[in-house]
Amino acid sequence: MGRLTSYNLLVILYTGLPAVGLYLMEQGAYGINIGRTGYPNGVLQAYVLHMAVMFGVYLGVYWVLRRTGTRMSPQVPARGVSGSEMPSLAIYSTRQFRRLAAVVIATSLLASFFLYFIVGASEVMRGTIGKGEFRSQMGPYGIPAYYLRDFLVPMTGAVAAFVYVRCRPKAVDRILLCSSLAAVALYPSLWGYKAATLTRLIPVFLLLVPRVSLLSATALVGMGYGSAVLFSMLYDTPVPADAAGFVLVRATSGMADAMWKVWDEYSSNATLPPYWPTWISGLGGRLGTLLGLYDRGADITWYAYDFSALTTLVAKGYALEVDVALSNVTVTPFGEGVIAFGSPGFVFFSILAGFVLAANRHLLEVGQRRCRPVLAVLAATYFGASTSQWLESGGGTALINLPFVVYYLASHTVLRSLLGWTGIRAHWTVPRPSRLGGPVGSRKREGTRE
Image 1 (spheres, rainbow, N blue to C red):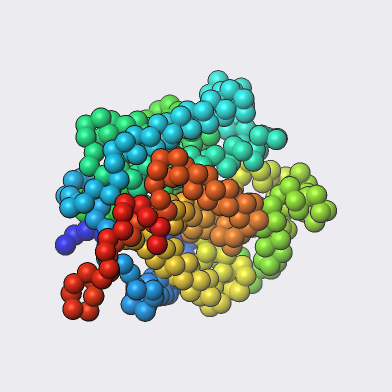
Image 2: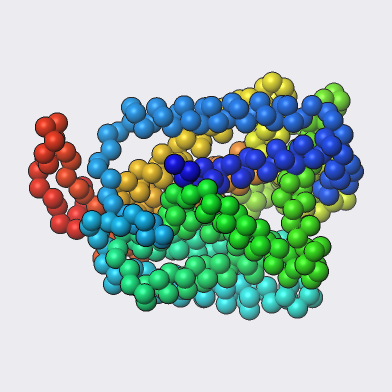
């Protein structure tokens, strides 16, 4: 009683905060991204419909997957960090966890060194370059820097968390876990985002704390808010009260004002930009430019093919002088649906969101329940790098695009190599119960493949 999955907690935050923001906009709040105050235009009712359809499909499809999907193996016991679910069987050794923790710390520190001294994050800290300018002018370092931020660093932290909850840790292991979390958090914290540290820890959070009590959830949200305020003081304003207020605004009306503007344009019968060309950007900026389809350096063409740039154009009143590389807005799948199909056609994206959430959660839980670290870690990474970004900003290419396919394939290879180096097999096999209640077959040795 009073407990929910960490996955559902994140889904509630990603969908609930924009609803609060839309309410505030309809009450006359100022939209920091659109540069004007809001007024009632019916967007909140439409968004509530979107949420109702999305959650209905999500819960229904998830139930079907659990009931009629592949028959699950008995759950391999795992211990949460609170210690409330102590395993009867230690699947992994503390030696394996310690080797993984050492890799996590070394990888994260090397990545931070690369970003700070080679890519140039130190200039942001010194105030000689803006954080937006830094992120848009990485040149040849952009691909490895983004890959480390969105995939490799969070992924190594996630696999360490997966092993930690399936071993019998001692005091030194808890210290190593905290050190690993700090190292993983360091790299995204250098990018200048207020919430980057939190979002890149999502894969670790999903595997380290699969369930939380309502009290723990409240505490975690409070800690997350405090972290965002501290980074806002570091990168935006040093005044605590101003930073606290800015984070609240950014997390509510700042996440919803562009969505309010898209709906306002639609309900006023204004012509919105074409949606479907934005899928071409799924080829990636470099390949698309090489093929002559668009040029990321030419704002006019990039507006037409990149969904984030397109929504920025709408939110900023079609001001072409806005540098889309330095500005982005969030419209969620609801706003994406409005641009693509209008109303009530946006419900198509509500249904799609429900399917994506159900499938992502199902794969994550299959990996956890069957003790398949590759599947569990990649599913958690996908939620952190793709699903959550789509829930926040919209743009279907967040779910599937060519660069991400390459990144996930590379991550799979790195993950299998890392597990092999630590002596962890891809699957842990437990005996299936027979219909009479007894075990079928014999237990395979630790880490054997199915």
